[in-house]
Image (tube, rainbow, N blue to C red; front, top):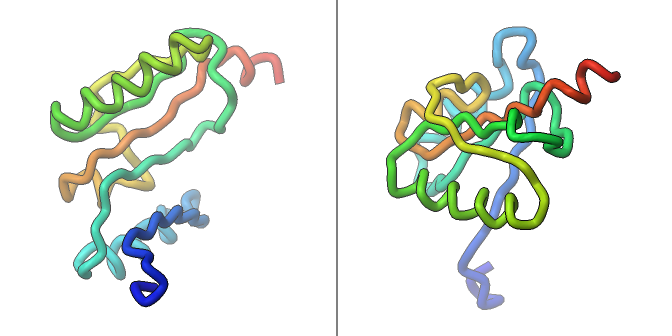
Length: 119
């Protein structure tokens, strides 16, 4: 890729088998965390990726304060555009726990319960 002038790669990884013990996440982490790849952020959404309807929608954050402030800046922009969301400190990571525990800033999106109740 460098011969084409490209020097950045953004990878999004999706896995399954969570309900069988986070097999996909653990496999990916075991095979990629200790390589020369650079991970900057990890995210999961165990309870759906529904649009936030109220401020009960949260990003459960695990990581350092510097990166938390960046996440909060993004959330402030979303709030200003009608997307209610807030950030809370939490060690409640499942799929991305391996990355979070390795010091990679991580969030677990938890949507409000309105849609779940109305479904």
